Amino acid sequence: MSATAMDNVRSATPGQVRRSPSVPAHWPIRRHVAAAETTPAGPLHSVEVTVPAKTNLTLHVGPAHEEWGGRHALDTIYCAIGVNDVVTATAKTPGSGFSLELSGEHLGDLASSGSDMRRNHAVLALFAIARAAGREPDVALHVDKHIPVGAGLGGGSADAAATLLAVNTLWGLHWPIERLRDIAATLGADMPFCLEGGYAHGTGFGERIIPLEDDSSCVQTLRDRGFAGQLLVGAYRAQLSTPNVYSTFDKMGAGDGDDNHLQRAAVALHPRSGEAIEAALAAGASRSFVSGSGPSVIAFVPDDAVARRVRTAWEQSATVDRICAGAGETGHNRPAIPVLSRQTVTLICVPVS
Image (cartoon, rainbow, N blue to C red; front, side, top):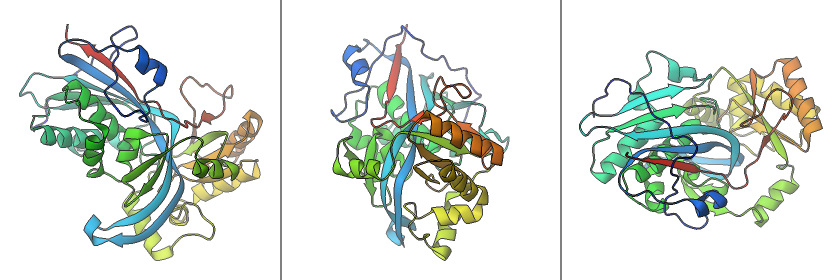
């Protein structure tokens, strides 16, 4: 599995043949797209997958387990949000190996010249599905990143999940979501969720997923507690190492009343996150908290007026480095990201001409 020189990836464009894989009814394929799509005959040239970020509305952390490689027991409610990465998998000549190309304005450590692309989450996912299928990873991957890196928003996991979905379709494996979920669980705690999206209850070390319907009592209770409306994401140039956050948690424990048990540790390592939470709540946010292991901060807002106040508070206090906006948003015109109660995973397939 040796790396080759970077290839140019031909992305699918509107009007080309679209296809969604065979999946359970609850899987978050956009219904009106799936119903209209057709399956192209013959082999595919490329598959493009758009996959969103995640946050944890609640994240309760238990003890570490040796049988899980030292990972902690988790009880969490996942939620997909409207910041997306796009992964394109393109077939390569047999025996030519894999390649990886990254694009995006905020690549963080991924853009480092010393970064080993074989450790990239998307590449690890490609290797994993290739081993499971008994094939060589002769695939060119292109990752167009918009999810902040090392931010507690599951960007790497989203890219890995998108790669599994893309290659499953590219190679015509037609594996069910349950088999992909088993592969994803070997790569990271939240990767199985990123395959399914929407809302979900995660247990084990986060890999055991039970999808939650939008009208479930659990989701409704969270909405009643202020986890509703639109949200803003305060992001940073700095990144936090998840193992370091857990190590700090082991020493400090959770903060009183924190729905995210890792928040106290993340704020200790990155104090600006705590300042951003305070600024958002003072500006009227219904909820504000560290996303996952941080350092990104989530602020739920009931309407555009409060979203503008939170944005202004963050900008004037310089407690965040940038504020993420959903696709198509510019400036202050649409100041908040919609919460995706049922995440959209869109697959665009291009047949070999």
